Image (cartoon, rainbow, N blue to C red; front, side):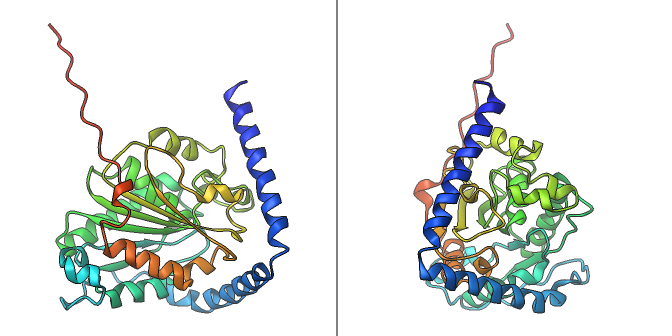
Length: 298
């Protein structure tokens, strides 16, 4: 069997499994409550959208919170972690207002440098967005005086963060990547979206293939949150970061939708806990492979 045929068979199997899971969900009253909650959350995000349209005025240094006693116990035990900047990367049709709740929670926990990034997916593809992210990473690291950064990406923002980390970032720069509702193996709903970035989310796109082919063990810690009622990630199994080289921690939420991930108390607490406690999930953190010995030219 050829590789394209094998991939089509695999995708067909995943879609069949998703249809069965959807049928089972229709029998659960909690699934209907989750769907109603997702609709309400969509309204909340639409109302907040204007707050994130404009990017903050560019300054020589991004703002950093004053040094104060962290609230989160893990940050009190390790105050150096509180100084690592956290960069939040929104999804396809959103802006930095997506992280109003999460950003506030991170600052209250004691993180001193929390930033959002706006981008235009209709103008740039994923590799170009990764370059924009690289510029912003350098800025926030310089402002915080940190050698590292932590990334949180929702939906396509997780793909941008992953592309930057795997293919653009220097070794050791990205301490942790957390993705929320990110289609790590592509999504069929991307066929409905215009622009070059949406094309990169097709399951068979060059970007999806390159992410699979270039995944290597590194010191970066990977955590992926996925939701069972996420209509934007199809098939649903794509929400898992399953490449063995990355040794990701995968967390599944029941009766939760795509945008509800951004306001879920369980997700907010989980993201804060994982970022604050760098040992959490550390047993799954891969280590870089030793360099191959140089070949003799004699």
